[in-house]
Structure formats: structure tokens, C-alpha cells
Amino acid sequence: MYSVAVRRDFIANHFLTGGDWGPENENHAHHYVVETRFDGPKLDQHGYLVDICEIEDALNAIVEQYRDKTLNQLAVFEGLNPSLEHFARLIWQNMAYQLKSTNLKSMTVRIWENDIAWAAYTKDL
Image (cartoon, rainbow, N blue to C red; front, side):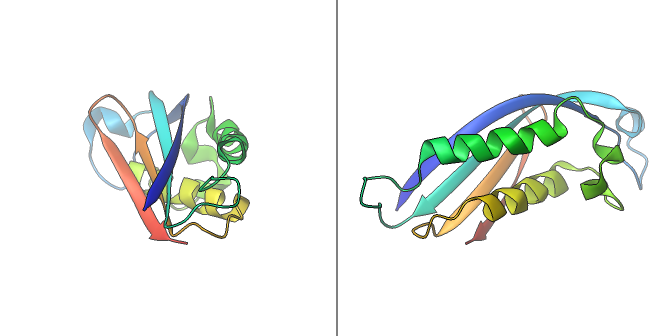
């Protein structure tokens, strides 16, 4: 199985809802790092699992939707607690929609909110 991954970082704000998490209930910023990882059993005619430039373009566009924003105010988070788990799934869905490679088996989106805490969403394509 081959794997290719691309990472980007950005700052965004959020506040958690639906529970008592102390300071996390107040609007605050995180320096997020998002990694998209693609897995598949074979390479294309050029020796690529997926073109890294295609991943970069898609990920850059996705990150710009969140950079310097308050996640709670974005339509994609309407009705959702802006947890890392939800955030990873939303980025996964957006990336899956944008990439059209036929030799990918699965994709994982991992997002860190700091140096020690991350969540991921993985699903077959």
C-alpha cells in the first residue's frame, strides 16, 4: 500500500458548546495543523498515487475557508460543536469532493489543535 500526505497550518477561533469545559467554552484561538493522507494499492502511469500539486491546491483552498475565522460562525458548523472530530470529518468530506483520483483506497484527515492533541477521520473512498 502506498501513502502520500500533505500538511498545512492555520489559525482559527472556536468555542465549545453543549457542556461545561471551562475555558474551552470561551472564544479562543488554536494554531491548527491539518494533514491529509491518501492510501492506495497502485500508482498511476506517472508513478504517482495522487499528484501532490493537486492535493496542495485542494488543501490550500479548504484551509482558506477556515483561516482567521471563528468556526462556530461558519455554516458548515451550524448545529455542531466545533470539536476536532467534527472538524476532521468536514475537511475529509470537502477534500474527497475535490479529488478525483481513481487509484485511492482511503483517505485520512488528521487535525492537531496543539502539539499534543489531535483527532482524525478515516474512510474508504
